[in-house]
Every structure is written in C-alpha cells, then in structure tokens.
Image (cartoon, rainbow over the protein chains, first blue to last red):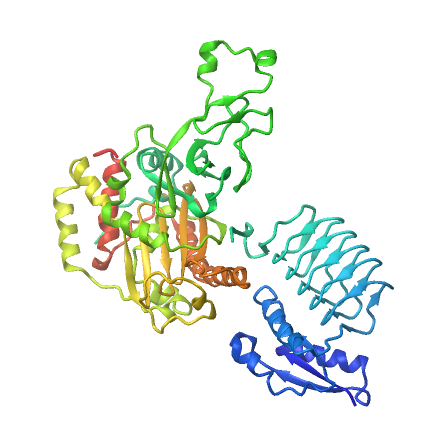
Length: 208
Length: 382
C-alpha cells in the first residue's frame, strides 16, 4: 500500500491528516505523520533524514509564519529528495477544469477556484475562499479562510492574506506581503508591505 | 525631589507652539537613513513641526527643501519615500539641486516679472549626514551639529550606523502622548524591570542606580541655575550619549547572525540617546538595530517612526525580509508597553495636576527639566 509522510506542526498537521484521510481511505493510503518544530532550523530538517522515500509521497502542513518561509524550506528539502508532493484538494472544494495547481498546494473545503486560475506550489487556499477567474497566486502563499480574490488579480509569492480580506478585480499584491486587516483592497500593494490590523500604518521594507 | 514641570508642558497647545520655536526649530532633527537615499532621485519626505520637508538625492548629493511647490503650494513629492525627480505633478514645475525652478510654458502662460521670477525657488534647509543618519535643521542660521551632540556622540553614531545594512523595515505609530514623556521614559532605567518584565527585561537585566556625582551636579545646577548659552549648550550635549548599556542575560543566538557583519563583538545591549527625540538601540549585541524617532505633532500627539535593520549582510540571503518582519513584530511588544503607559499618563494629566516626585536615580531627567524650563522661560536661547 502506498504511504504518505504528512509533516508539520500543531493544528495544521492535524487538519492535514484529517483532510488526507477524507480523500483517501485507510485501506488505500497509509498516512505517516511527522511532527517537527520548524523553528529549530537545520535540526528540524535533519529530522527528515530517517524518512523512507521508497514509493512514498509527502505533504507539508505548516502555517504562514516567517512569511511562509518555514513551510517553503521544509517543502524544498523534501523536493530535493525527489519525493512526490501532490496537491491536496479537500472534499467540497470546487476547482474549475484546467486550473493549474502545483506541488503541495492545499485547497480547503468549500473553496472555489474559478476558470483559468493558477495556484503556485506550496500555496494554501483556506476553506471557503473564492479565487476568481484568471487569478495567479504565486508559490507558498497563504490565503486564509473566506478570503475573496477578484478576477484577474495577481498575488505574489509568499503572500499572506488574512481573515476578511477582499482583493479587488485585477489588483496586484507584490511578493512577501501580508494583508491581515479585513477590508477591500482597491489599489496595488508593493512587495514587502505588511498591513496588520494592529498597526495604524503599513510596515514596509525598503532596499535590499 | 519635586519636579518643576507643570502639566501644561504636556497638554497645552500654546506651550507646544512655543516649544517648537524655542527648542525644535533651532536644533538638528533626524529625518531618515542614508541607505534609503542611495540612488539619484531617491527621496524621503517628513513633516517636522508642521513644515513639510523633502530630502532628495541629486547624483549622489543630498539636499533638503521645503516640500511645497512655489506655484500653488502643492506638495512636490507626495509619497513618504521613493525614487522620482523633484517634479510637481500639478503643473509640471521641476526643481534642480539648488531649488531653482524650471517652469514649462513659462513665457506663454506665466509672464512673471524679472524680480518676482528671481524669488521663485524652493526654500532650502541645512543638512548633515552622520554615518548613515541624515539630519536637517530648519533654522536660518543652524547651530553647528557638533555643538548639539558633541564630538564623541557623533563619532559613536557614525561608527555604529555605518554597520547598518541597506535593507530596512519601517512603520509609524500614531502615539497619543506628549513627546517629552518618551525622552523621560528612555532616560528612566528603572521602569524595564516592571513595565517590560515579560519582554525586554527577560533578555537584558537593566539595573538603575544612583550616581552620587550626577546628583551632586544636579544640586549645583539647582543652586546656580543653568547660566548663559555656552553653559546651556554644554549641558544639552550631556543629554546625548551612547554605547554599551547593559549585559545580555544570554549570548545572542539566531540563525541569521552568521549572515551579518556584527557591530563589535560584545554581548551587550547598546543604547544611543540623541537629544531631543532620537533613540537607537541594539538589543542583540550589534546584530540588529532599532531606530525610534519621536516626531512631535501636537501637545498630546507624537508620531513614533520606527526603523529596524540588521548589521550589513555578508551576502544576500533568502529570509532577510522575514528576519526583519519578525524583529519588527518582536519590538512591537516592547514599544506597545511603552506607548500604553505614556498614553495612560497623557490621559491622566489635567491643568491642575500636581507635579511628579523624582528619585535621585532620575538625576538626568531632573537636570533635563531644569534646562528645558530655563529654555522655555527664555533665560537662554539655542
């Protein structure tokens, strides 16, 4: 029987295990959970050494911390080993035909991904989120539950969109942004801009 | 000892207006980082004491001007920072490094008399670069910056700020408190034990103490008064200082530390206080720096502009943006603790509130208020 390593931490790991079980019954897929602390850096990655790769697939389930970088690092280290990391589409999600989804994507229950959209690898689309037609979401993004992305919008790599965010049609959000303040975005947002509900003004990164 | 500071110094708008004229306009003010102005046409804008200021890079040379087009008073640069020529988008007027104006369709549409045309240029302000820190002075005849901060402080600011990386994260907190509460708080080494017991004090054990020499100096000041301007400037320089403050509870150890050229090699909390309203610190032994600029907006309003940057990267690394964001959110905890208490105090103050009682450990703040009140009573001028 094929096996899948489900690797991550906390509620995301529990949710991913439940979701995989709902799409593949125990008789068809053996799930092997591995809880690790990504904050441990290299030590966490060393924890992958003992995994049995032979015929196995994997799925990484981590939250958006460190601008989604911890999930990206973990996924990248598994990818380098050549392990298959197919996307997870939970029951009840509606994904239009022809939508392209790359490795380790996670589409939550009840999410709607409309025609012509492309979801980059390692991106999480939360339950009930709506992604309009022709939307591009870069890799390793985190789209929270119920977020709405208008048609033709472009969401950069490692972007986090928090609860209550609505992205207007055709808007562009640069890479590594966080928008965690409920409301409708009707202007483009430059890369490395962080809009938090706790802050009166955006946090921005200048230079490189 | 009983403070002489009246509550009006914190809550009265007329007092605030006099303070702007007597204290802030004559002094050099931090306005931004040189690393944010590192290319031709890079600019930053700030409003300092009601005056909009733009600092613009002209082929490597930084110039400061009033950010108002002389035609219809439109702001010339409208973003807080960016890269764009000094050009007014309203009617196309543009400005060179001297502030001189090029006016499109000038002969056909404006026909300024020669005398009037000669007066049409931007108001320029004095500018000084100290390492990576850019200062401006709004006075017509600026005080030499060395007289404000002293040579040792300028050398320390230069050396430390040259360690800054070119990638900087920043934001502005809109504080509802008087700016002086911030400098008093920063010069009070006893509050971290209580206010920051669960945050900063976990990493750095600040220990307040009484300097008998400092207290004796304060007593002499109380007896003799501040005296004439030269002595007042000397005392003002003593309000600025920087360097090692307190040892860290444990050696700093974060994965990114190996990626940056650390400022010095000591496991200390570094602290620089540049009077009147700039604070720089490194809470992790020179691996990263926070810059807090308290811009007075009104008697009960202060914008706290916060910059965070690491020491120079040895080479670019993928997670540098995440490192900066994580640092900013970590610093946010400590800043909110300070802001909350300052806003509480501001809300409590009223015109007949009694003056506070200062302990001997607060001799610096006590000296500072003697100096400040003499300035406000115009016993000397800056």
